[in-house]
Each structure stands twice: as structure tokens, then as C-alpha cells.
Length: 163
Image (tube, helix red, strand yellow):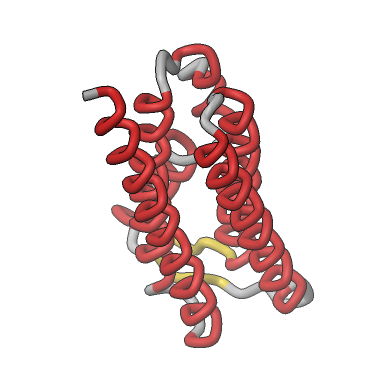
């Protein structure tokens, strides 16, 4: 078992959400479709709210040094996913993400994939959190699933226009 502090997990969550907000804000400038711009703005605002939720969780445990006993294989997974596969600054830079998208379809594909990975990450960490914090994470997961539904709706619309 490896010990993660709850603060480390919260910092990872804050980073994911901050960069998700940044990503969706950039997306509003990458599309001319007014409906898509509106959805990207809403998604950015929701990511901002998720960030605030993680901040509040952090404030609640700030004075405590809560350790989460995470199996070593899960620790490696959590670190890898949080550093390489989600909305992280490093990942976005390495992918030169804002320059490589050729179309709205590319943006949407990346966004859906990132949201799915975020959900998987949050579900994994929730097993190691308190019951109260688990319910908070479950709420965030539900909202991330809503993001996927909105993005998939945009994909279907885009594909029907392109086809």
C-alpha cells in the first residue's frame, strides 16, 4: 500500500478541472457555430464549479493530514492518468492540443475521451475517500457524464451536417 494524502488527490482534481475549464474556454474561440460556443461556455463554467468543489473539500481537511491507503498498482495508475491522460497543462502542451485540432469533430473527440478518463479517475479515487467526499465525487461524475452527453449531441449534429 502507498499512502496518498487526501490533499494530493484534491490537488489532482483541482488541476484537472482548472485545465478542463481552460480547454473549453479555448474551444469557444475555435468554433464559429453559435450553439457549440454556448455549450463550451457552459462546460467551462461547470468545470469552474467543480474546481470550487475541490477547493471546498481541501478547506475542510486542510488542518488534517488524512492518508489514503492506495494499493501500489493503483498509485501508479492514478499518477499516470492524472499526469498524462487528462486535462493537465503538461498533457495539453505535449499534444500541442490547441494547434492540432483540424475540426470541431477533433475537438469533440478529444473532449469526450478526456471526460471519460476523468470519470474513470474520479471513480477510482472515490474508493479511498470518506463517505461524504464520495458523494461529492459522485455528483461531479454525474456532471462529467452530462458533459459527455452534451458533447456527443454536438458530435451527432456535426456529423449530420458534414455527411
